[in-house]
Image (cartoon, rainbow, N blue to C red):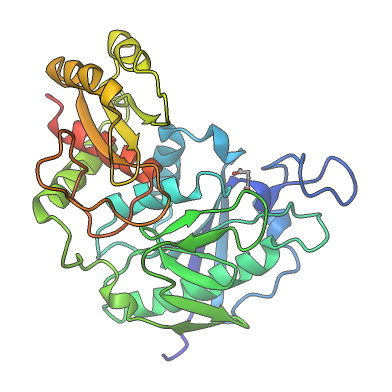
Length: 339
Ligand code: SIN
């Protein structure tokens, strides 16, 4: 691709990438979001043909992320008309949820977005944040050029030199590196010495897969649009309930009583709901609660099995973690909420 002068916007939300250790050399027990984005960028080598603007949107540990941070992030991006691609620095703990949310809100004509994060605080020995940030900028520059040349854009994540679609990756390890992987589909590309090597055509990223359910995806997009248009709309209350041997059903009526609107059941094996939960789940459904059943297994999709009493959502042709399913159920409820 020919080199042009590109404007990249960096939007910082905090996280370990901006963290500082409480004790010299510590790699746990640090303060996430302690450093400003300008401090993280200082001294880093960036693509020569790029101009950067950086904005601190929040400075949080991403365990405390809320939907209003997503509004703030999108507002900040909208208020920065000059950039051709955005880089978002984030905590790793809810990175996949922000990536998922942005993915559901994204349209192919919008500017590309790249999220990145780090597992070690900025002052730790072997801090991974600076390299990830340099990779994210290289990826954003590549995507900005493609978008300028008329290619559809998407939401991407890069860590550990790998590139995933915002839909594909999950944090699978709490400490060790690499902490992220794409369970079903693998990386779409690699960043090597600030050069992007695509393994698949990024222009195809937003195309629905053969198993995707078009009507369900349209519902998710409608829910996303409604959420974005009405900042004050109440967030739908959706909980994930985790099935175990001897799982007690009493949590379900307690949640219904308290006003929950949706439940994602983290079922056993192939989305199996314990028999002792069945009456409580039926009662929740009868009370108007939307219930999706999935699996607590961390890899692979549940496979539809005839007429199970509680079926897993089949809107996506790929593995979606429980956290991602919960967001899709929130979007579905938003789509069907009465104005
Ligand atoms: C966070 O998610 O903000 C803290 C953990 C991390 O970024 O690795």
